[in-house]
Length: 259
Image 1 (cartoon, rainbow, N blue to C red):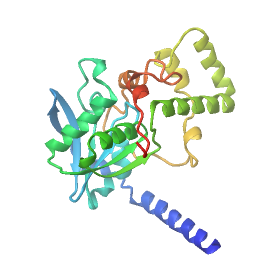
Image 2: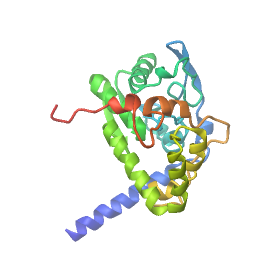
Image 3: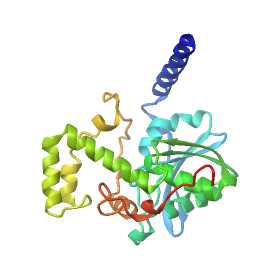
């Protein structure tokens, strides 16, 4: 049993080392933006490689595709990798009305993009918020899904709320002086989407909350890009989403395997 455990540890360490070794510093130079018009909006899509297609769904909601491309772009060597910006994010157009930012519309964008690219089946890799439309898509369009990988994901709005509660509890416990400023602003009626509140809440060293290895560095593009769209986050998670999850995300719950 001890030998088996050691072998499993070695395999995991080897796999982890292989993943980091595969990251390419110039990966962004190997991809090119192409814009597809979907529902009257230009959607940024970056595709490379051959083989079975993989759609990468970024988190946030509000993140652009670039950080996923920086970490997983090298898989173009074995697959057709598809990185794209959801509506209102990254290089894609903004919606005319913020109400158009929703889990449901993100799901439909995936399907419309699959059809435009003429893929019969696709695999999905979702990170954080990206796991929500990934699961919703797999439920609604199960015949179009080959495989699905969920990274640091959520199965419901209630789980998102639990994550926020856990983060805030950790931040308050480990950074009490900073949290006093949060409490002061909350007492004055500020919510998490207010610019004044964002400056304080955004100053917490999140890498110490989310990462075991704080020395890891994110692969980032050298060109200017919109990495974050706060209006999208507010529309899908709610005006006070870091404390009270609302919006279309709250309404989402993936069915249990028994359903």
